[in-house]
Image (cartoon, rainbow, N blue to C red; front, side):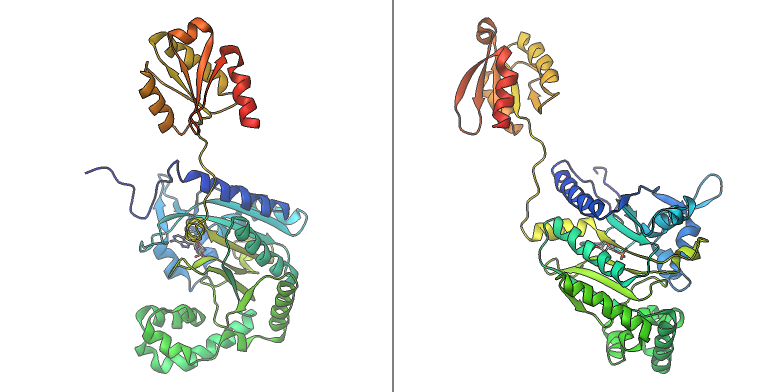
Length: 421
Ligand code: AMP
């Protein structure tokens, strides 16, 4: 059997890389124009960093999905299942609270989760992650959501919908959790095991339940938005005002909650209409208090992450083509043995300025032209005994079939002129 990549992981092949690169370039530009600095934290951290930020009730779910191992120094380490904890650890470690506030950070890279694999759900996938630390203003919430919308739009995506919700302040959350316990405890035995666990640890997360039986029980109940206190309600209204002022299309989702415990107030997701069941491209929210849970100073924070594979899927769904991989401008064909050394040497020289391919052995003209064609080159430049005697290359435009005799000393200029014309 052929060797296989680990289930849920993928090679990103040369033909796919241009799409990745284009996405990264566009997102980088959008975020850095808004004042975000790129950070490249390590791929693994002390397991503790992820446990502390997950909070008590998220433990079970998060730990089950983590790739955790013990290193030779008996340390428990974990491949990052998300970026945020590493960003916050770095924020504390490097004293970023003394930097001009708020601090905007972004990053891109692989994350690892031991998930059930299906379309759009992998074990190594990639995220673009963005966080703003040091401001609890509603304007920052709106800016952060707008930036997510703008970054996704910059990739070329249309058909985006923002879903906006609020989980309220901690007191509002507890009031809602009490309400859910009160309503659901009498019928707890009708819930699935996972939902029973949530009911015990963090009832609000029941709103994420997928099981139809669970849903039927939950859908009759009141929503988190109905429990917002006046501070959270005002904040929520202000976020909406900004988004409306900037024409960001959004829908209020009165049962939107986020997985981790530390979220408060604003929660949001961006969905794509068209990629099916795994339609969530991105999720995020406000998490004041999370920095403190890692031992840092009290710091307000808000952020989001989007899944790169999902966004690329959605772009493909919309029929959007990324720019091509770089193809040779010219493919040099050696028609005799002596010419092999000539074209190899010339390739090195020309490659300082343009992409060049060449034949490693001498070729008959027809075969050489076929090689040139397969390389995707625009031109084939033939070199044999006749051309050597005349000091020329025979250049064929592979797109339109026209042929030109070009002096060897002029070839570089000729190609560059054509490329720049
Ligand atoms: P989360 O960190 O769970 O809020 O996920 C943020 C985004 O990452 C999601 O909206 C997806 O686009 C993407 N994502 C999450 N889990 C996976 C996965 N297992 N495979 C691929 N993409 C994922």
